[in-house]
Image 1 (tube, helix red, strand yellow):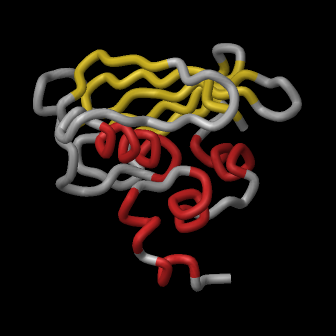
Image 2 (tube, rainbow, N blue to C red):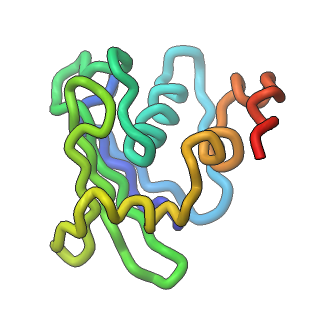
Image 3 (spheres, one colour):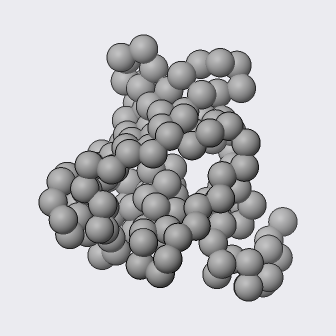
Length: 137
């Protein structure tokens, strides 16, 4: 799965923000308080659920957004999640304007659990400095 587009409705300091990563490794850098950690948290929230009481939509917008992704077989999907209280929120997995239902996300992620995603595919400085997070099978 490759993330083609990130659309943030409202999440932390972001309101109506969008980003289109290029294929390959994406490194996000910038000065302190630029929103790097918030962007990482948003991407994790779309795939794994929203952390309760973290990253409210401070600058307006509906808390949440979506990721447009392309699967290895070329299928284009949208993973969309909105929620005020955290947790699952309102999750939709959309293909060709058809809502496949929230249960389809597990198939999209191909069994990759939250801890694997956070430590292998999308990690921050915290994960790099805490090797004990890599002890799980």
